[in-house]
Every structure is written in structure tokens, then in C-alpha cells.
Length: 151
Image 1: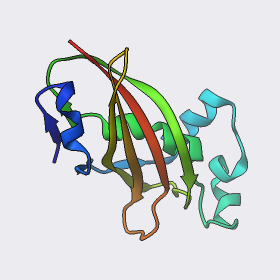
Image 2: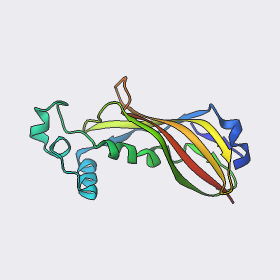
Image 3: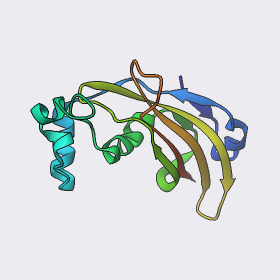
Image 4: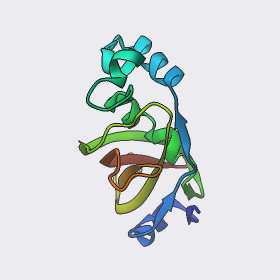
């Protein structure tokens, strides 16, 4: 399912629409790669044996790893005609609600909540929820902002 509009000026009509991504596996290799890229080698992310006896019962993804998956997960969920480029404009609020255990699958649920024209293009605010397969509580909820520049 995709949110589609013909051009950036039609974005206000998409407010309230939502779309859901495919599932993505968050395995130990991905967690290790993120730890290596960021220098965050805390045992709850990497020490499988120690983490098994720890508070979560397994290693968990970094919260910022889960957050960093949003562009991948939400890519393609919003289709806007006549756009030269889209860039991440920022975040207004992020809440990490539940850790993502290694081997879990996650997906993004994106709802457009605002669309404002600016000098640079159209700023689109979305409520992005990263859900965990089989869990009632999501991993995180973020208010994301993207900037769409007309082509």
C-alpha cells in the first residue's frame, strides 16, 4: 500500500492517509555492523550469552539502529509525482517504547499528519511507528519530517 499524489501541491490532500512497509529482519549481523559503525559495543547488543541471562532474554538492537531503519522501511511508501528530490528534514519527537530483540522483524507504519509549503519545497510531517512482528507495543514512535523539492 502506497500513499500517492500527483505533485507536491497535492500533499495536503494526503493528510490522514497511511501506509505500511514490508517486514525487515533485524539480525545479529545487522546489530554488530551498527555497533561497529557507531562504536557502541555495549554487551546488551553484542554478547549473546550474557544478554540471554540479562533483562531482555537476548541481545537487542540499538534504539538508534531501529530509528535509522526508518528511511529504508518507509522508502517507497509515499509516491509524489514531479519531485526532483526528497531529503530528511528532521525529527520533532521520538519515543523508544520497546527494544527490538535480535532475530525480530520490524516494519514501519507511516501516517501523513501535516504538509506545508516552504521556500525550499514541501515539508511533510509523518507519524512513523516501527512495529515489531508479534508484539502489541511498537519499538518506537517518531514524528518525522521530510522535505520534497518539486522537479
